[in-house]
Image 1 (cartoon, rainbow, N blue to C red):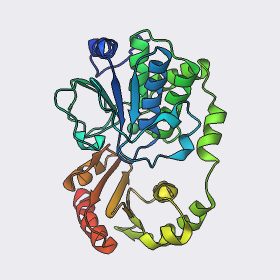
Image 2: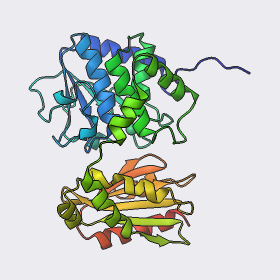
Image 3: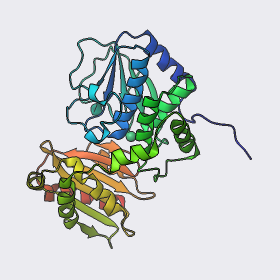
Length: 328
Ligand SMILES: [Mn+2]
């Protein structure tokens, strides 16, 4: 039986219109990307930024740090992202921030907030919450916002939204990609996004340092429980030795997860003076629960947290203990 086209099943349709009304009556908008931003957060922000720019709506895209993933520099208005908060703004829009803490600063409670997100850990902290954990990416929800309100998607916004969906779904390989995801992608290509250009820009501009550090990280691999649990780490000095950025070893975790026997894996690295832990799982293992033990969050199969310690061995053992309990 053919079913009707469903734009969304969790988000209330009127919330998309209410969000647009708020945007239209605001004088200055702050779009907030999350701490340690990824492609989904930056792309969702830039899709909105291009829409606002084309419609002469005053705004800024903010990230708490100036350290942005430079492989996204081909998206229009990437160079306009700032780490300086404007003196005045009367509306905030957060994109892909799974908890309010991910905004990276204390937002004035009197400022209305539109919360675009797809993290399981999101507790609807906004004034208007466009949150659906079943979506592959926040970019998909931003797409629905455009379409529901009949807003024209220009080539620049189409490119940005495609990048968000492509990257956050690990090139359409995650379970949350459904027929609606592909319908969106189809429209985005129609509106001018080029899949080959985007894949080339995202995937084929690696640094040499990346290929110097990844073998070291893979060398740290340890397996537990008949190889179903895998751990890796990156020592601080390896970054200095190779000149690699912490983002350069991100792929190591996906590589470990590609092993047939591995069901759950985590990666410990020192970033900005704390241990950052990235967790991944396959199937029915919920790693966001493990992350939440350490005040982190994320998705069912991909989550993260930080632990205030520089002792990698100790951090690894603390996380491993929780992982072993989850998989019992
Ligand atoms: Mn995301």
